[in-house]
Length: 182
Image 1: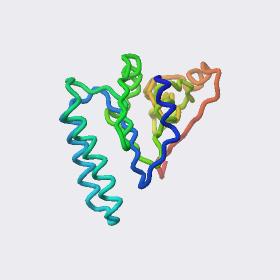
Image 2 (image 1 turned 90 degrees about the horizontal axis):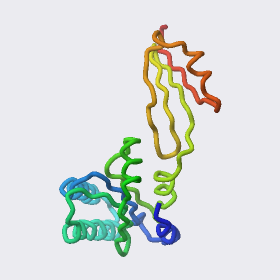
Image 3 (image 1 turned 180 degrees about the vertical axis):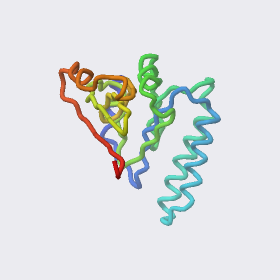
């Protein structure tokens, strides 16, 4: 992960108008449509100063995309504030996002840029193991605060559940879900 991101951690702005945007394997039209959707939502904000501030910021981002991005697929982290800072994702970072089936456009807003989220998403590989049993189905999942991946899915009729669970050295989070009336 690009350590240059950390220098933007303490920047503050009003109206939750600092945007941390992660985009991967997305074409320009999809991103522009996403921005237009956000711009439509802004129209319902009652505070006219806040509405104008946020609208101007997102429109600035749309103009940046139209004027600057010339690639077929966008694979970048954008920090959208008074200025736009772009960090291109590496191939290994794109692979992580794909492997964990992360949404192609992540759009976070706040008084601060969400740098901790970006760092955790791209560099935290400490996972909890979860065995989720619902009805007669079992899902083996690994997850942390930003990522989730299904490792195995099977019917509990097809596996020895005790044996399956015993292969893990670490603590297992588990959840049993039963339907009412069973």
